[in-house]
Amino acid sequence: MRLTLLNGSPRGKRSNSQVILRWFQEGFESDFEVFNINQPRFFEKAIDDIVLSDTILLVVPLYVDSMPAQVLRFFEVLNEQREQLAGKRIGFFIHSGFSEGYQSYSLRDTLERIAFKLGLDLLPSVIMGGSEGVRLMPDNYQKKNRNAVIGLGRELKEQGTFTNTFTDILIKPIRLSKTRQTVMKTMIKTGTMQLYWNNWLKRNNAYEKRFARPYENK
Image 1 (cartoon, helix red, strand yellow):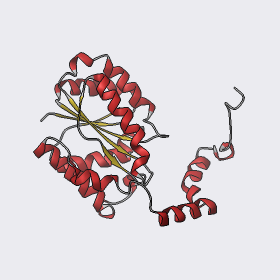
Image 2: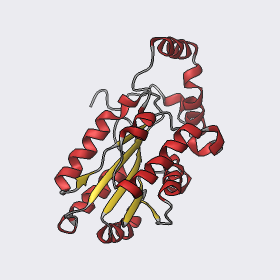
Image 3: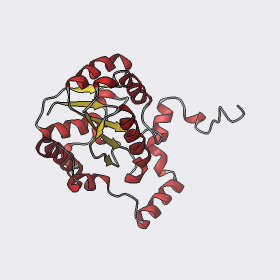
Image 4: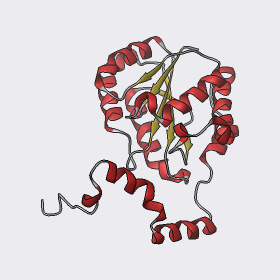
């Protein structure tokens, strides 16, 4: 199998997506290059590799219930080469900071529709929640997800597809239990939930503008 691995994160090599791809490569036992598509200048090289491959795996983070802008742009450029995509397969690995797997359903459906329009065959899509911070934690702190992603790599190499064995592990919880919902609501009320996000707003001098409505009167 000739495989093209795509990292769709704006963070590129310093992203959670890159860690997930490293785990996948462990299972697939491959040294295939990972192509970062966080900037248009990287598109041509990635597309050249896709043309030579029969299978594509795109690992992409959920950004505001959709894909990062450069991933959409990549698909627009890829559409110009669609005559060279016949018979190829693509798989989507969608991950997000949300714990609940269902948060990624809309992006999964969008990506699968795009694949259909490009004439690509589909591998089963993979969803993993709670991925924010993966790049900051040692592997032994996240054994369950790491082992499941390694398992996916092994499955694709040996069986040519993904089964529910590992996709079911990664997508759970699909929805939070009532107990966890209560805990989350408490964290929101006390402001604990916003600490990480607010810290980033302050670092980027945007904290004072967090309630801005620039298009309200447009």
